[in-house]
Amino acid sequence: MRTWPGAPYPLGATWDGWGTNFALFSEAADRVQLCLFSDDEDENGMLTESRIDLTEVDGFVWHVYLPGVAPGQRYGYRVHGPYDPPRGFRCDGSKLLLDPYGKAVEGDVSWDESLFSYQFAHPRKRNTTDSAPHMPKNVVINPFFDWGHDRAPQIPYHETVIYEAHVRGLTLRHPDVPPHQRGTYAGVAHPSVVAHLQRIGVTAVELMPVHQFVPEQSLVARGLTNYWGYNTIGFLAPHNRYSSAGQRGEQVGEFKAMVKALHQAGIEVILDVVYNHTAEGDHRGPTLCFRGIDNGAYYRLDGTEPWRYLDYTGCGNSLNARHPHALQLVMDSVRYWILEMHVDGFRFDLASALARELHDVDRLSTFFDLVQQDPVVSQVKLIAEPWDVGEGGYQVGNFPPLWTEWNGKYRDTVRDFWRGHPDTTPEFASRLVGSSDLYATSGRRPVASINFVTCHDGFTLDDLVSYDNKHNEANGENNRAGADDNRQAGDHGQPATCQRRRRA
Image: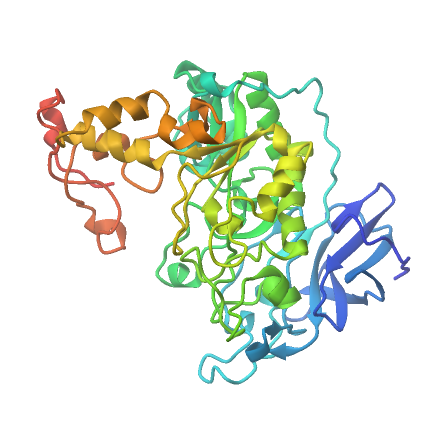
């Protein structure tokens, strides 16, 4: 195939109408191969793969331009270099890798031992089996879209009513949504769903993760899935399973059409984003993307035992927000969703993990500095989940100006007041009028507090105020999530029908 040198920026696969530029960062690599997959199948029923060596390198960015390569082209990478886990290196040319800047993904991970760089029976031995047959593939996209007269609603915080929603859950059983659009971006954009949101007074839809994510192997083995999606593998790609139009780039246009429809109804779109960790897990996890490209650049490694990952998230790894290229990925991703996908804001999952410079959460970390000075990112709604699972991770009230926070203290106080705990009235009053003890000294106004009582992490509001104990034995999680079975609010005017037993 004819190749040109191309350019190191922008990263990812960029189609210009005539050909496509491919660019991938890796400081650890000795050799990088771009893998293109055709629609033809070999004798084993696998897509035919052709490999192109990227010989041009600028600032550790490997790049090439391929004339004639157009939207719909499937691709991935193979990164050759040191595989030395005790020193923190995990390059493995036998593993097909997703592009960190890929804007669309076709297919799913098909869990197989070949996805791992070690043998299950002998963990100290290399596994060099080709993983490509079991990997999804990136897709070159057409970025052009007719936005018409689309404009951001720009609703001020004091008038904002945020509705946390799941793309699939919001639309899957709506009788007016065509069956093939239920559970998809098109379903969210359907006039009946939009009318429902308007009717209940919603001004912003906060979508649970729509970045491309991967259900964990342990869940899939039990016939389950990661329904919520907090297990990201692609920070620029809309999740392909939420597309009714197809997975060869159609998911991008469908997502944009959803945003356009909601904007026309005066409703903002906020994304729940998970930049604190990825779907590759800890040292026992698969090699799907970042680990095989540049393990030390993308992940926080233990300084004394580099084979081990620092984990402030409870998910096996933490993104290395101290590294310039990992930070660039986060900022480029956020900027992409604003400029190209027209979203109006973000809720940052476990945001404290992004603020860790060494170990402690640093209120003036590099990440916050970048957000503060960015002329695009600083102008949208920025909502922090102000905690992580590491020591000192609970940071309610400590985020800098421009940021709002899920106010965990408001949540806890309102729950205590509802349950009739003694001596909660003074604090309840303080929380209700803006929690000045948390925000006034930092120059933030009461709107810095995102007031909520429950969310996806707990019971529904009805269950929360109605029952004491969980009763969800059918959930497959040993009754660790779901609704409660005993009344807790019987003296607060709830109707007697709420005393029924239920399952989530």
